[in-house]
Image (cartoon, rainbow, N blue to C red; front, side, top):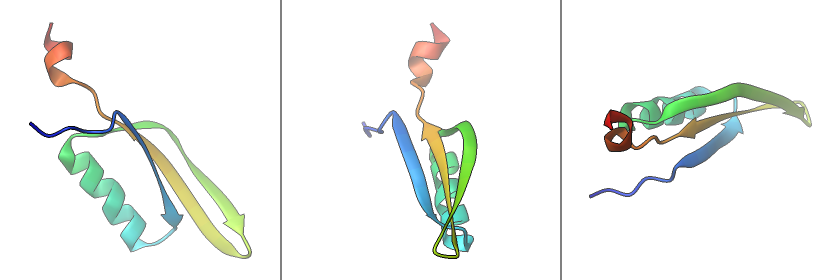
Length: 61
């Protein structure tokens, strides 16, 4: 049995690697939570997205 964190906040530079990390989390079964965020720090775009893990067994009850 794999244990997943119920909440994760992914953040990093706005690049393909960040998009890949979000895509991988979704492929594992995480769901997007809330709106994405964008900040500009020293001219660099930093983005973030929260994802949540829901217990699908509990949802079936």
